[in-house]
Length: 173
Image (tube, rainbow, N blue to C red):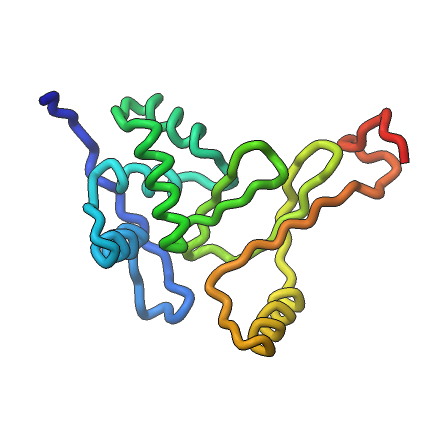
């Protein structure tokens, strides 16, 4: 069996949404989740988590895999994909399609919730936050007897600016 060297995971402290006094790391949350589900907490899973929380923005599984390979990791593509599924289930990462053929992810724990507008012309993703939308979603769920665990809102739209650089020139209305 070949022995591989792995760097010790970097600790990233983030505040919980409930209380600033209760500081937990994403590693602690993920380790507890894995323990509750009966999965092993492996260095490779910790490396995927740390790679995700070390950079901002949306990414796909292959981007994480390639970044980790470029840094010398021996991680497998399957481990990246499987770990992403666990991180989504654990509510540390969100999953979105944005109308593309593959899924995109982003870190969410300790970050302000936001929604997305996807440009139908160029595919660019714009983020926005609107407390009124959040309140309405809470009210609808409460009225129907639900508590929100997580959600995503994606709006697919076309830019109305006459001189938008993203607008397709040959589009017929």
